[in-house]
Length: 277
Image (cartoon, rainbow, N blue to C red; front, side):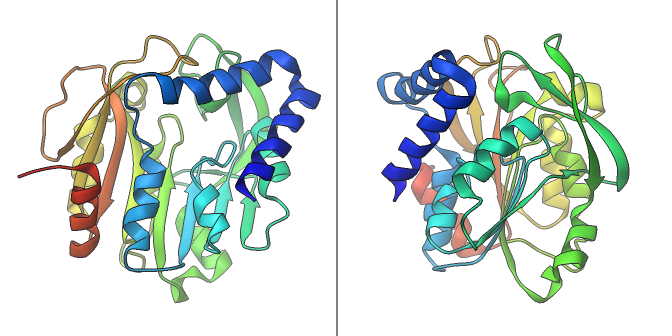
């Protein structure tokens, strides 16, 4: 099933975007296998969660083409995927729209509901769409409405279900998404979100602000730190895993934060990431 889906996606890229885009996609796939070690944080999250649970509810905010949700969808998790960039969403729907356990939502997610906003997309990376023009390559794309996760939970009746995993990758708006969670009613076992001061400082927060907000909600953190980007669209190199609090190796480092409020899950993450105390 996984191989067939990859072939299907490759054909879709070739038909809609041409041979150059297909080559760029394959180049990224190959570089992750012949270069230095580059951890797949989504796969780490999946392995850690599957230690204690076969299925659950996953929310993917900024789903892009669906790389993060893939294993969860294939293992019968209920997946809610947000992808506000209409071009990215076309491919996401092509790949996963036929699955009954995957709901694809066209809206953006932030800390307040909004009837109309603009998605800015970049010509140098399909994974760099944002609610703000954070880079010289950003140009206005499609218009979207914006929703908070609190409003979404009410819509979907998710207060009655345990949300096991929330992944956030919104190109700068990860803290905004977190602030839209009704923490007194929802307490996800695992959150995976992106940090990077080069983007978020213009939006009013830093890596430490993001980390400390999660700590204030009762979470323990593991940081996956990557070297500063040479440019968007070019594969980055990885530095290390470490527990928080920590100081980043470089001021312009970026990466992902694993945040969990479950002791067993935290231990599983420590073992998978090979962090020794």
